[in-house]
Amino acid sequence: MAETDVEVAADAAGVGLRVLTLEGEPACFDAEQVDALVHRAVAEAQAAMLDPERQQAVRAMLKYGRYRATGRGKPAHELLHRFAREDAFPRVSPAVDTLNAVSLRHALPMSLVDLDRVKTARFRLRRGRAGESYVFNLSGQSIELADLLLVARAEDDLACANPVKDAMHAKLTEDSRRFAAFVYAPTVELANTAASDLADAYRRVWSEARVSM
Image (cartoon, rainbow, N blue to C red; front, side, top):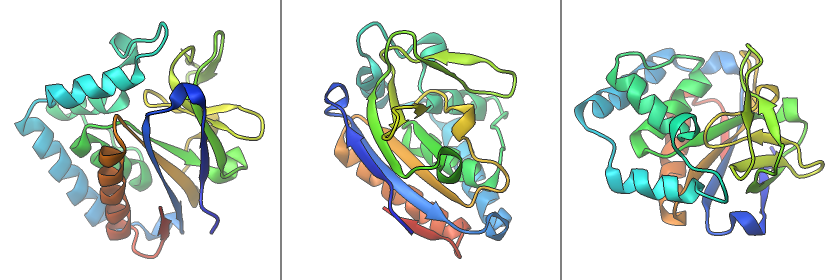
């Protein structure tokens, strides 16, 4: 299994980023383990508010040019925290649910990209350009990417994911068996800790899969 490689552009320097590469049969996820992981993360979120210092640090990491991490531009984990407190935490698939649970616990945004759908394991971390956008859901809604931190294919610079919403063309399906998980953080130390926890979580719920960091 080839590991995922990420080049960091100058405008994304200083961002803590860690990437996991995972491969296995989707049918081999342990549903009970995934449920336990999600329930624990939701219970923790319901018992406490978001750490204001962590929230501020993540928003500062995303702030760039005209982009501000507020309103519809809030990082994904903030929305997950709100859903958890409203007893409406989304359940999508074992792979996505596992990532969302760890993202919620660490209060850091994370992305999943299907490596077979995007046909590469080489990416670039950069800020979005003026006029750049992509569709992020089945309804055809688009997110404007100008100045937003994002992950793009290295070969043609096509944007695939970001800390707010991932691209529809790169999202996992029920048949996904080879994908990359991106952890975005204000510091390398926070990214390392969250990525290590995410790797452990995947090994626990998907014991037959190969996980590399």
